[in-house]
Image (cartoon, rainbow, N blue to C red; front, side, top):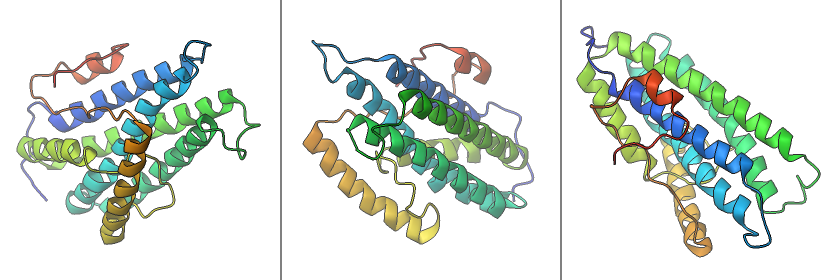
Amino acid sequence: MNESPSTGADVLADTVTQTHAVLQARLRSAETSRPTSGRPRAALSAADPFLASTSRHVAAANAVLAPAARRHLDQGQQHAHALALQSKRLEIALSQLKAKLYGSTFVVRRPWAGIWEEIERELAALRTLELELVDRLAAVTDEHLRSDLAEQLYRTEKRVPTRPHPYLPHHGLTGRLARRCALLVDRFWDTAEGRMVPEPVRPHRGREGRLAQYLLADPHFPG
């Protein structure tokens, strides 16, 4: 455990905050999009970027933040386990959205309002848990390590599955192997369907404060 934490800019916390601000903006866009005669796939086109970016962030958080918690925090294993459980809850909600969008008979009778409400609740819970985790890391690690973790989070989001997989392992060697296999399958279907997968939030030291970024209604961040 590093005993010399820095009080400088927290790039990791900013990256997590800004990522969730982007996810919230994409969620709002997906919720308000309705198909029309001219754009019958409008709802799917709006929801797919949210599904892809949220699925990737969930997988990356478990691949990067969970090991950091186990390595640097007291009771780190419990924090990692809590992250995995909340990730699974959110991924189950995302799976319901995906099934509804693609016309699955299993959710055809479920109202849209209930699906969106569940996603909003589980996404908010994940955000709270992640920010608590990075705040704990900030108390025991230095700025350089947290910047490295932010960069790892960004790089990992570019090479993890783009669809929810709630029942795959989230941690350890089995988790890494499961993500690798799921990524190959997801990439195949993304290509076949011409699916748009957005770029993750890039860590950047010159950002505005966390609160200001979170309050942006439609955030746009430098690439």
